[in-house]
Amino acid sequence: MEKNYNYTRRKMFLPEYGRHIHEMVDYLSTIENRAERTRQAHIVIDVMGNINPLLRDTSDIAHKLWDHLFIMADFKLDVDSPYPIPSEQSLRPRPDKLPYPRKDMMFKHYGKNVERMINSLKDNPDRAAVEETLENIARYMRTKSYEYNQEHPNNEVIIGDIKRIARGGLQLDEAALGSLKSEYKTSLSGGQGGTNGAGKKKNKNKKQQQNAKKSPYNRPGGGSGGSGGSGMRQR
Image (tube, rainbow, N blue to C red; front, top):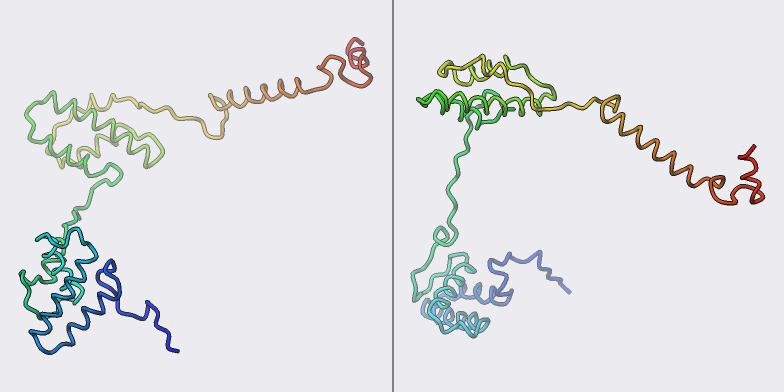
């Protein structure tokens, strides 16, 4: 007996209609007489409409059924349709390719938005607003530089990077930018000193107190022989 598995069959374009409807559509292409082929196509449309009996009498569903018929026939069925015969491009339009920006960044760890903000300040006539914005940008650049390099950069480095990004088209108040202070607090590595060492010492003392409470010599009548434990402590 020859076995017929689904993976050996032709792929169904609309699986919701099932294999039998697809075989009926395939049979339409084998009919040579165009008039007979069109008549059989109307019968197949009626069968497809029986799947949704509540919607088969509406005009929209009829148009959709004819479109589904041509989809299952891979747009190769030549029949007289009451609706415009669709094409694969009209029912399966391909989206336009989105252009991907490939502009190289001067400093990747700062990000492209930092370069855009700095370059946008070139045409700003408000000197006070430019200086205030540059201070905020410089602090943000210190943040990203610390995340990338795990160390605080000097203010001269930040000022130099801003000059390179602006390409000399921006006047900087180097005295104000050079006085920026770091807003980060570095913790000592390995837990030596600082808050980490104090935290470990506190946890150690807490464990010792818990172990002392669990000791049988600290309980009433504890130790060997009941009161023997307390007698040993009096000695």
